[in-house]
Amino acid sequence: MFTGIIEQLGTVTNIEHEGENVHFTIKADMTPELKIDQSVAHNGCCLTVVKIDTEEYVVTAILETLQKTNLGSWEIGTKVNLERCMVMNGRLDGHIVQGHVDTTARCIAIEDQDGSWKYTFQYDADQPTVEKGSVTVNGTSLTVVDSKEKEFSVCIIPYTHEFTNFHTLEVGSTVNLEFDIIGKYVAKLLGK
Image (cartoon, rainbow, N blue to C red):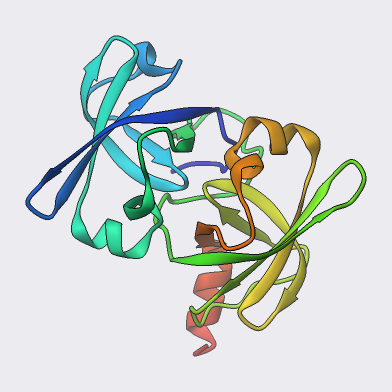
């Protein structure tokens, strides 16, 4: 379980294909603190650490993960939002995030708001967002400011813009979405 509060950015340094699996090597300052078999959210996608080597570690993505997330588009040099799993006696600063990406979305607009940025995303899933509700974009816990059918916007403060991979997004970029877990259960119970 995660909170959606990004700890740091990592950089993809190697990509190795093995059958339908892909092994990603990530360089990150947190690497010396990691352990084999630990869960780390990568752009909101929970992956297991399978190898550690000083400043870099390796995670493996299976075909389903590659098909349902933006991981298949990663290249050497891609900046990745990283978050280690939540400590149960800590503060929940974001919202409850499972690390299970529901779908991807495409950035359709970026508006500079003189000190902050408004990003608008469009997606195909039949999951609604709620204004002032929570959504996870590339693993970042955010508040929905505009909610339409299969489209929503979020506003980003300068800190989030600088210390997550939001500063690398452009119109047309694909991001990972995880909808609020409570909202998903409510939608399921109501048959939506």
